[in-house]
Amino acid sequence: MKGKRQNTSLVLNVIMAAITSVSLVSTGVFGALYYRERQEVQAVMSENAVLRETQAQEVIFQESNTISNEKMEQMLADKEVEVEEALKEKIKELVTAKDGTPLKMLRKFFTENLIYHDGENYVFAPVLDNVKKHNLKEENFRENEAGEMEYVENGVVVSHKGIDVSKYQGKIDWEKVKADGVEYAFIRLGLRGYGSGKIVMDEYYEENMREASAAGVETGVYFFTQAITVEEAVEEANYVIENMADYDVTYPVVFDVEMIVGDDGRANGLSQELRTDICIAFCDTIKAAGYTPMIYGNVRCFTQMLDMPRLEAYEKWYAFYDDYMYMPYEVSVWQYSEKGSVNGIKGNVDMNISYKTW
Image 1 (cartoon, rainbow, N blue to C red):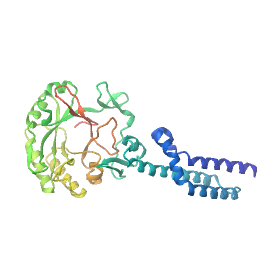
Image 2 (image 1 turned 120 degrees about the vertical axis):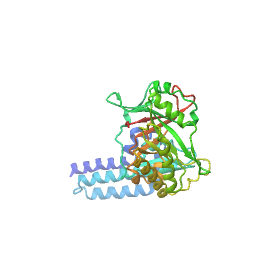
Image 3 (image 1 turned 180 degrees about the vertical axis):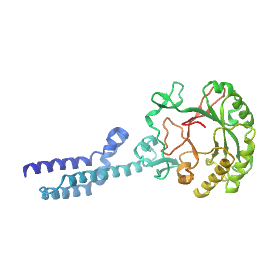
Image 4 (image 1 turned 90 degrees about the vertical axis):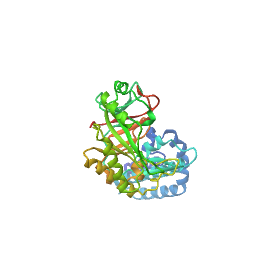
């Protein structure tokens, strides 16, 4: 009996300790934030928690001759989950405040969500089980001496350096671009006006296609859509196909579905279902013409704007500007900066790495 009672007391101490420690947080992911807020979380829980603990102790001592180790372990696990969930709810409250917690810390903690700003609000979008995930390892990403992102396996760089350009880069010296290690470029072919609805070609498209190819830079193209019907999406795809006919486009043909920010874009109000239908119509038309279709978007696009399970058949190009790739879903290209620098281009240029070639 004495031995059993000592063992029970030890387990009780562990259960009580669980109230003031959460293994996930104690690893340092939330560091100071957790220790600052732990007292407040416990205070919120205290009235009911103290009563429950008192009752739990009485039950355990009464059943000390018969309680199993499995039951004690389950009680401990249940308490740890309870405290962790309470802490998560507290942190969600904190990030809605004006001095909200940095997104990077939140994202490390809430791995079951994709978190982003939508206006003044934080969105905790669930990571979907039925969308294919990538197998990239966080520790394999690194910045090289030039400040460019790379993906490395067994000490070897296996990612591929690329850029994307439009009229905003002006006149480009593609020989210098190639010499700077750029393997490929996505060149804007055109766009549909977000107010007028008119399709127009990028004024540097033809020059960029000719000179990039002459310099040995592989080319893909992208089109900024403002289609609001499936028919308009097919029209955009056919326009792209027609204007690629004179060039050797080896890399994907990209459908840019970004939302207009700071103004009323004609496609801003599309439902998720219709926007997804539009993407499928464009991509299938491009694929039927013998090209590789791809969809470009950011975290909001790939959580809120598009129905991702319906788009599994198409490659993805992901825009996220930081030193870590915050996206669990499978993507082929990561646009990691809009402020890159490449020889042969005046001013900033978007920087990308791809995990494959075409």
